[in-house]
Image (cartoon, helix red, strand yellow):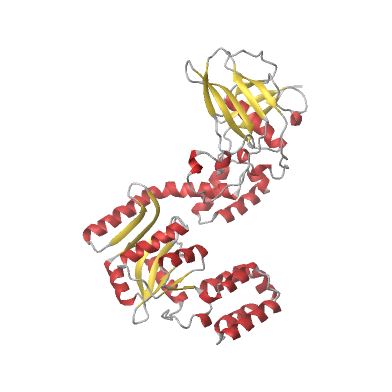
Length: 478
């Protein structure tokens, strides 16, 4: 029986974003006079047809049961790593590089140790975490597992297994979940091409992952997770945006040089642009001085090639027409970024706070507004909530066609708070929705979007839908 051939892709773990599982290899300089281990019959050779794969020639026997053993020989360190990672995938654990030894003569690596990702323990007293608050603590994953594989380079240039520890002190991952482990997550070339195509067509990571799962026949065959897809798309977007961002900054600088009253600001600095960008021309600043009592901040407009939120600050003039108070591109939708954005916009508007502000229903935006505009009355856009209702309650709308009209009547036509409360409870009980999570969320926020709770505040009652659509149409044609 002829020897069989297995190919191992050595580009491992490129799709993950988990600091706790990073390779923490330690380099140690030692002398070159390491003892040599006689080679056994398992050998390797490079595949001349591809620079990204290594062929490993295996002897006769049951290939599915093959595991590392002392004396096993490889053509390269990468081939050893690929083989051990393939073995780990079959068994049910993730791997990483633990330590290495370098030659004092020329600095070349002559020994490597590959370990289970749960090897060792996290050092909670490290300098990088000792004196600072950890905002997003990570789950402890290292439990002192001893499973490992060590390889040494021989005088011949080949690498031989010098030590193999098989046992683990933790449960192994079943085959249908092993694809989620870090060292087994990799976005292949064809998958990258498909992601690039779908991203260019305007699809988001969730829809792209659904397409990939259908294309490959299951999530376990995709080879990476939605988090990896998001990270890849984010990096793609950042790389492709660099040139256009520079053009935008050049344009803003030119506008300010032509008119000192033109305002713009970047989160970060010109040399290292890290967040959002805001600008307001003299006319927008003048508009605010006359009509800035009530403001709408809309982040739902994303009709641009990068699918970035374009967020205009708008209001209405004395003719009920929409007017612009400034614009922003939002690259970072965190609470800190929105706080920066609102504080910077307030600076552009000479520090004058609006009486009221309307935004889409977003918890992060609400937290930022509470910090920057503590005295401003904040409401959520009712139209956006109605639109979200069609998505969150689609199963109810299909089963009960009358629900939507009753929901609208409950929100829009009740005259007293007690009447609304009674109507709402009756509605959710009638359609068995008392425990629906999204409905509970918007009900808890009812004082910021249901009209009966907002009659004591000034919002210049032009339809929010009209205001958003009119401004969006303006930017579409310009």
